[in-house]
Image (cartoon, rainbow, N blue to C red):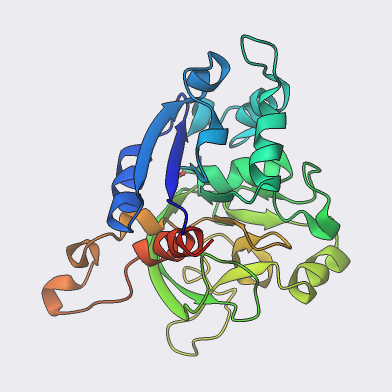
Length: 269
Ligand SMILES: NC(=O)CC[C@H](N)C(=O)O
């Protein structure tokens, strides 16, 4: 059994790191640290000392140039003080079996870095993007989600339906064409979809699909299932009283279950 060592990486404008670290502890992590991106370049922290990397939600660099765009460039082109490229550390971290979770702004970073969906195992090549919601406004609401039982994703393993909050302006997935969208489905890289509360099937209907994402895509995984990026915030449903209907006795599976599945996977390694 290996320990689950979690690193939550923040930057200017990140605002969900504290809650995400709390949720990781609740989910059973053995060690949780929060570090700033510059702690990596100054070599105060090294991602190779961890096995679960979390990119939390927020507004990195004020969403200038598009959400997480500047941060993606920073990851691609920054080096440590001793001259090691940060991106090589990230690559080795993943090749050695690490898990990566990107929540909302973190998901935006993962697609812009090309870590998701990494179709045909083409890691670090940008294949899709996330853009402005169809509503042209920030959407802040709870959504119903269905997990894909055929997906290799370790974070959603055994989960069926979830109810989680979203809060974003740029959550609509963009694919080059219909063929790419179909390949995402065929390769089971779609881990989570927005579903309609009545039919319980994938939906394009607003506001159940809050951004107009094609095929109702809310979260993606990679071919190895060790990376998950999702627009909803699992860390924000870490206690029954976070549920908007808790005073009426309403409850769903806690969002922290997503983190717990990843941590269980690490414990089993
Ligand atoms: N909650 C978040 O992480 C916000 C995501 C993002 N910056 C957006 O508004 O699209």
